[in-house]
Amino acid sequence: TTLDDWTRSDEYHNKRLISPDDGLEGALKRSKENGLPDIAVSEAQGKFLHLLVRSHGFKRVLEVGTLGGYSTIWLARGVPEDGQVTTLEISEKHAKVAAENFKAAGVDSKIKLIVGSALETLPTIAADQPFDLVFIDADKPSNLDYFKHAKRLTKKGSVIIVDNVVRNGRVSIPEYTDANVEGVRRLLEYLATDKEVDATTLATVGTKGYDGFVYALRL
Ligand code: SAM
Image (cartoon, rainbow, N blue to C red):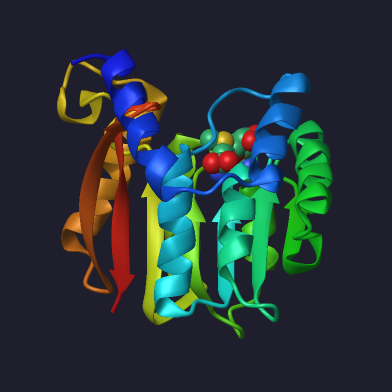
């Protein structure tokens, strides 16, 4: 099967399970118009993050890597009125588009957008109010640094998700040694012996290709 088949399948399912949402569709449209790369989570993955938040009644969510805020809006739609999504983005341009998208989707009051390199902004976030969910989806070479911060900022029962950890299966093929693949490998080596989380990789195919995410439970 090919990407066309996976896209057709995603569309078949999404049409039945996911209601149209002007805020989310507008965010993708505005992101495209402003020349942002087409690397947001898929619709089905966004809804999964949303349902995860609602399933557990999560109130405090942290995201590393905002882009145009597509996944952020899905997350914000899941937290209650007094919940909050903190999202970190290095690019001022991406952050500006995201802020417009949050307003248009009517979720700006639930979102705190912090602009700067997450390697510099994460250390400024205190652990006194732990997050229920951390979604790591930024530069892959820093995955392990972000994961360690995510552990510092969560509590027992929190969930940490790291996106793009399969990369067309390349993470498992030794010949591939690019910085993104190596960034994922370092995270997996760390998880192999970490006693403070228990984790699994869920591989996915769909309109975004063959990839997957690590789902880690904070123990
Ligand atoms: N989570 C978004 C979604 O699904 O809609 C997609 C995020 S995109 C894959 C990755 C984002 O991380 C980009 O917008 C990029 O500018 C940002 N990024 C890259 N390096 C970063 C860093 N050091 N700190 C914070 N954000 C960074």
